[in-house]
Image (cartoon, rainbow, N blue to C red; front, top):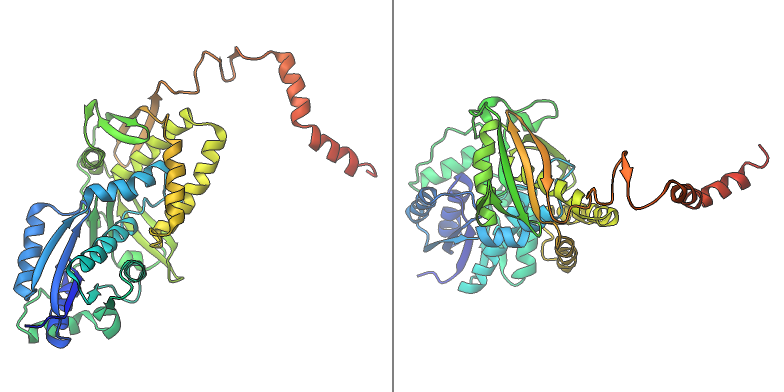
Length: 398
């Protein structure tokens, strides 16, 4: 019995199937496969992945359900920060990978593994996220990445598996799909260039809803806690809203961004639930927070999202920013009313006991109850006084 333990982040696809056989047969490891569920797998899919892992000859297979902790540790703060990278992308995959890598590292410590492995290639962000988090959390454990290190083609991987008696469907899927709690990413030939858009057939959810409908989202201190008056856990709100809105084709887009390794990249995504929740939450904040709360939240939310996207979840500055974001949510409580239409949605308005747009103090452009016209005359002079002085001094010669 080989006693060298290696924990493999396993999805059941071609790359991680290759990793099992290679690590076991070529490197002599006892392979312990782990799938980390962050809300993207149902029980039937998890059963199939487990069956495949044991068929490949792993010593053990474990499923770690991180859906609730993924929300509490990452997604919650993406909502608090209204995070949409480059104004577009809700970090559907990047935040999820950080959660998965952390769970893998902790499991490796738990079973006393000598090594960890993942199936990332050398071309994307995931290799950095996994490597960095492993280096932080299990610095004395070796990291092995067969796909990246061997630089094998898909055809070579298939041939290797067949040589070891493992039959793999050689038909390459046109699109790679990654589904999680916070949205689904879609990659294909169109996302490899700068001008093409994904065709209708590429999107995982078909557009079948055509009649508009109204949705009521309730927030309690920034967290979504009810949908259409029905109380539920935040993760359930996200999943239910996603199921309700995605058939409208809402939340489809292509994100273009700077990768960790310094190249530009494109990825398609469908994330109706996350996009609606971020926009609804932001609208509620615009009614319940002050100007400077909103100003600093916008800056810190952007930094927080980018740092998380680049795998820096364990940097202590993240806990500092989370404390700030949490503090801003004390009065972000109320209902947001949304109307769904094919390929779009409308934020109709909000209702909150903390609404600063109370007509008790005046109505913008109509009437005020807190000051007089004479007050405004004096305020305007004081407010522009320094700029007036600058113009007088610097325009003397003119």
